[in-house]
Image (cartoon, rainbow, N blue to C red; front, side, top):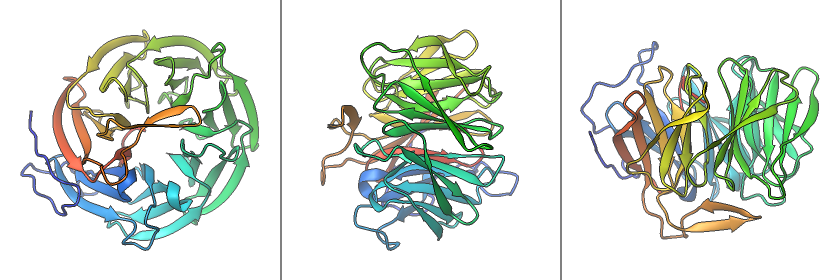
Length: 361
């Protein structure tokens, strides 16, 4: 295993490998949101090194901006981060300059519609009394429109590959809201789950648009929905994962689903055709959260909180460092084919969501 541990406050590239290069001639970069630190660590995965650390307080934001989730334009030209503490989604260029921001209350997860200029944002897990709305943002103008989705605590989010539907999961009830973009129409789908809320943390849609999956924290399962009728996701399978399955992504070919498990400190790999567990990747995970896969499907990136402290907010449990006691965050790099950890970079404290240019999600 190649391993280079670098503190998140360090700037500059220190690795020795030749960088992975996109067609633009620039290296592929991974952006890790460090929520408790108010920073984003920008990493060159080819050399396990830090390219930059973006401090949002130094950029004029509040003392506690709480960057939570990140998405990146496919060509890497711009990246977007939700700042829970500053009620804003911020757009930055490749040189990490702030371009614009959209105001929206306690933004949580983000998703790009790759068929249009739209960017979707839900609400943070920490927002117990969040409005039952999501933000639909024009990425060129960064103007936001609030859309009523009629479910409590909207958090989990996925966009269909054709951009026609957005799926939003509730943290408070066993419900998924289906937003039909063309008609600006919202429908509600009840998810079978008994008397206890399944706490669907995140959603993902397969590259062919035929399947929706959701991670269920309380039951430790991956829920699988058939999208034969995209307006009515139908629960067809449940797959056991590790403890507290968190964010989730399909591989670019749609053959597998990868799920980091926050409490069992591992990653479950699921066969997306047979809906069975292929393997569980173990290694140096420490309360994993965000996950993304490189565009070529060869590398999987997992952000880690690296804290044993658990906070409970509105019935939701989550890893969150104690103020002033945060250890460095941690990015783990996995070889997707070998299903083995091949790299680690320590970042600014508290690794949450992450994004990569051209990757999934």
